[in-house]
Amino acid sequence: MHKLIAILLFFIPSLLSAQTNSFTYENKIYQPNIKTVLCYNTSREQSLPVIQLNSAETITFSFNDLLGGTKNYWYSIEHCTSDWQPSRISTIDYLGSFNDDRMINYRYSSNTTRKYTHYEQTFPNSQIQPKIGGNYLLKIYLDGDKNQPVISQRFYIVDNQVAVTAEITNSMQVADRNSKQKVNFTINHSIPIPNPYQDLKAVVMQNFNSNTAKVNTRPFFVRPNQLVYNDLTTNDFWGDNEFRKFDTRSLRYKADNVKDIYRDSESVNVMLFQDVPRNTGAFANQFDENGNFFIKNTDGRDDRTEAEYMSVLFTLNAKAPSANGDAYVVGRFNNYTLGKENKLLYDASRKQFYASMMLKQGLYDYEYAWFNYDTKTLETFPFEGSFFQTENTYQIFVYYRRPGARWETLVGYANISNRVNDRR
Figure 1 (tube, rainbow, N blue to C red):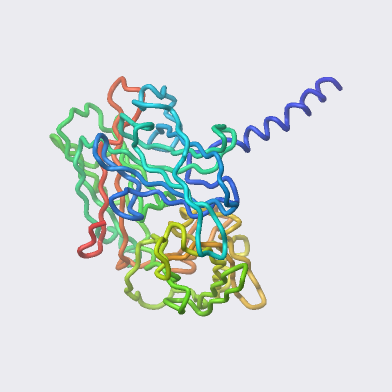
Figure 2 (cartoon, rainbow, N blue to C red):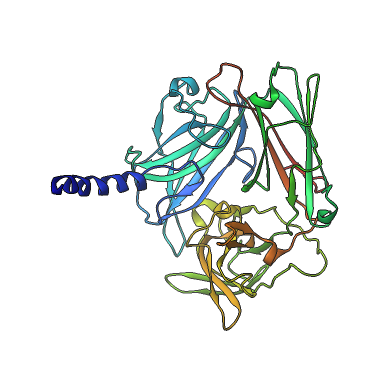
């Protein structure tokens, strides 16, 4: 018995280490010194990381290391299922090139209070060449060792075989018509789809926020070369509210929503104006970037290496919506995830939430969300409200597994908006 206990004690730390030092199939940063991960279609800054298979389009990926210096970062990609699990197929099936490569494109920051090293990579390239469509996970790791994860990042490659048309309307449910939006869409195809209820899947999400994703497996109508998804009860999304925002593209003056800027020889501190809940009253229209953010420094020449890192103070004057929960600041800048960095502390005596986050100089959209531990739900309504008039973008991803195939292929994609003349 004692020998068995000794053996277990020997292996448990190794098992825990193995669990810790492994990639998860989500957008995640594993090292505290890594900041400002960007991943987008190179044709447009901060566009969605979606490219066409066998085209000239590329993905640009970058991040900053606040420890500075030069490290030996490597990267590889892995094909995934529509629900972001490993496809478990050989790299030979989805890569027509090498399995991994070293990141050699880096530059040091200049004229900044906080020193950092900027790493950047564009792919497909001569080393990494995907050859099938689908969901992909980009993995960044240290010293060529995948047991030392640094970043995991999702991106998409579309093998265009179907066309997707869509519209955004009010919810068909009477009680939700003033607060929700409904997405109806149609898949037009010329390829044979013998069993669309089993072989085809469509995922709809709002503002590229995976927390909002809805999976469609059953078309409402099946017509020759056409699948229609317009069931009265599906694809209803909370309209939410227009995103809050702040502008720190210049630190020489106080721009939009910036109350104060404090600088010294070691740090830059930005205090935002205090926010209040917007869940009551009428809808107020304002232009936003639908949760996006942009790294910009109008005081310098190079946004990548001359933009400052700032400690940004967020303050929300509001009561806690329930007794058992936490508030967070979310946006695309942190992939709408919940973590220690973006969790707000609550001062019950002042009825005030606050948090300080280190962010790179630029233009940011953000909102406040409440995670209720009793219901295990994340919702923005307690702080932001929800209105059907809100301008949002919706992404539709269509996956098809051919009979007998071993993986799902991303065969269609659409990005639509209820904003007039929005071409994003």
